[in-house]
Length: 91
Image (cartoon, rainbow, N blue to C red):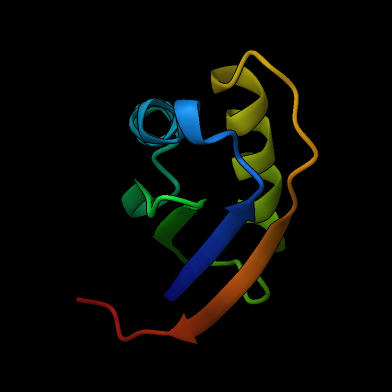
C-alpha cells in the first residue's frame, strides 16, 4: 500500500475551498483510491490517497488532473507535483 500526497499550485483563491470539497467527492467514485482527502491550504490544493499500485504517484496525479478539470470551470495554469510517496503496511 502506498500513501501518495500531491499538491496543485496556482489555483484561483476564490475557488480553492469549494474545489477541494468537490474533488474529494469526485474520488468517492474512484474506489481504487482509499482514505482520500483533498484540502485547500489557502494557496494550493493538497490531495492524499492510499492505493496498492502507484509507486511514483503518477496514476493519482493523472486522476487529480482529471478531477480538477471537472470541478474547476475556469482554466488556470497550475501545476501538480508529487509531494511524497510512502510505502505503508496494510491494515
